[in-house]
Length: 82
Image (cartoon, rainbow, N blue to C red; front, side, top):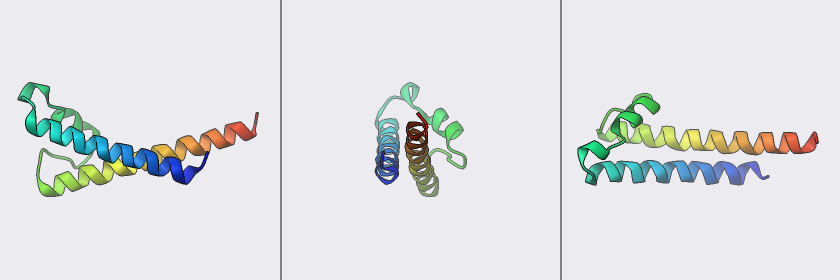
């Protein structure tokens, strides 16, 4: 597995998912929001100011990149050792 590709894939996926979630919260009724989840999962995110929006986006992309790199690294490590 290419670590660079999986890092980019999961970073992109996380960023797009974050944007879709923010968009959904903007149009959905109050009871269907993921607002509380976002505030718990993303330190520094508070609904919704411009700086908080950027903090959430950077954290989401960063966590996606970390996940992609970790998964690819562990896959390559375990595949070599079997």
